[in-house]
Amino acid sequence: MSEIILRLDNERYISFPKEGSVYSESIKEDCPYCADPDCYANCDGSAGDVDGLESEEQMYDRKVINTAIDTVESLLLALSEAGVINLVKDNEKIVEAVQITLDALVNHVEGE
Ligand SMILES: [Zn+2]
Image (cartoon, rainbow, N blue to C red; front, side, top):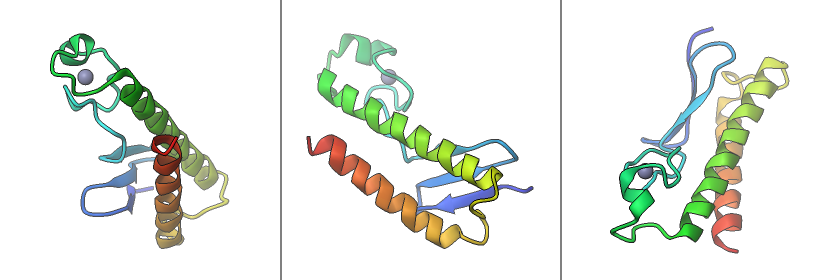
């Protein structure tokens, strides 16, 4: 299969580059120090937090959101591989569902 993309807007998308593989671009929240979404107090800036850019609570929320986004990606991949959804044919509907899911996720985590 060739790469399939679920494009949420100009910057954010979920890509399925080949069978059994998924990654997202600009959907996860980045570490404010090093811009790596998978950094949680690992880089020099965040470990020392000299600039006070991210509190421990903000980092925790970011981790919850990013982990949930990983889960959404894995679920989409699994549903696609099981033949339950068709990423090409159902692209528009899946994008809509992902947007609703991400909105609910952020509201839930940051609205606590
Ligand atoms: Zn970092």
